Image (cartoon, rainbow, N blue to C red; front, side, top):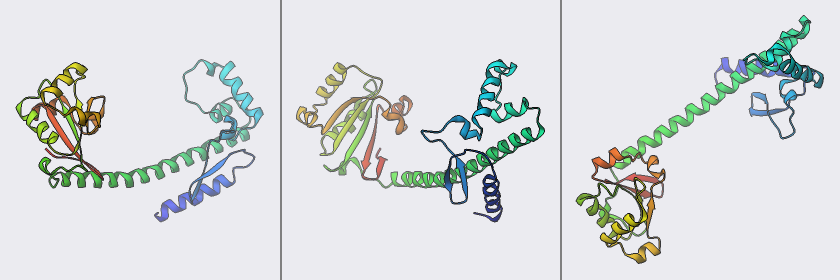
Amino acid sequence: MNLKLSIFFITLLFSIATFADTEYIYSSIDSNISQPTFTKNSEPRELWGLSEEEWERYQQIITLSPWSVWEHNATPLSLLAFYSDNQDERRRYARRQAELDQWREAAVILWEQLYDQERLEVNKEFKAALQNQAEHKSISSLSNSDQVLVFIDLDQCEQACKATSNQIFSSEATAHLYFMGRPDRQKIFQWASQMEIPVERVKQKNITLNTEKGEARRYGVNPESLSETQGVRTFFRHITGVKEIL
């Protein structure tokens, strides 16, 4: 953490520590800053640092005043300040609002730092997966410890599609077939019969027949990509993830 941000956090922590006569509940978001947070017993007024009397006045304002019919994003602190005739009281509300806004800004900064770190990791893993796609094993080398995900469009499944499917069925790998376009069960079973899929392997769930219900999105499979591959897209699942093999 750079010096400027460290000074910011120390200053913020000091300002919150001087937030007198409030009933805030604190929890740590890192070692340098505290935040007001919810608990199952929290009351809304506590999160704004308001007394019961102040919260009751706020409720009257949003119920009975012109503000009750205006579209607005004013906070309880803002509304109490707007309807206060006491300058010291208005300043006290302004101080509370400023400290809350400062905490919110700090929380966003911390979140963005964490996000940036994780985004770099995700990008690194994604690039590694793309690199590995060129180094995967082929369908012909599948073993009984492998699993294959096959996305099929029966309306486009012609010679190449059937050849790929047969090659998978002739291996000992577990194959999960996902049929695109929500075909009816009869059409799926008819196709499976034509492909001479062993019924015993289906019963043992070594080969599963499934209508696709969103699984394809994870692998970027859509009707256009299926058209490019003549009705079939196949993915080989390693222990560490899924890699395309076509």
